[in-house]
Length: 126
Image 1 (tube, rainbow, N blue to C red):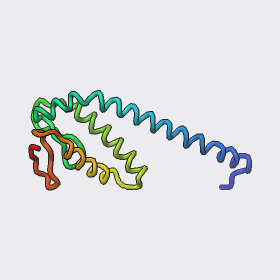
Image 2: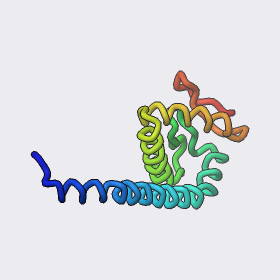
Image 3: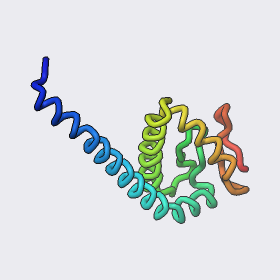
């Protein structure tokens, strides 16, 4: 399909605006995600300290004991998936690769006594 010259010029003028809008939306989404993740951190830290949840080798939280707030864990994991997908798209890789790299960092930063999952799937206390 061939576009008339006027439509082509309009499209070329609008593309930068569309890119700017998309970038702004992504930046706003990231700010919203960051705020949600920060607001959940005290609850997640308490659940990690109690052993109710642990950091999996897939970059996501896993419920380990009854009584963990699965809703909070699911919300955190959903935000992590979104962030990992955005990073993967930007870096030209897969979300799974980003998640695995994040898992290593999360294990490295886990506090002593928290549950972490090794690469072979075994759960250990750090």
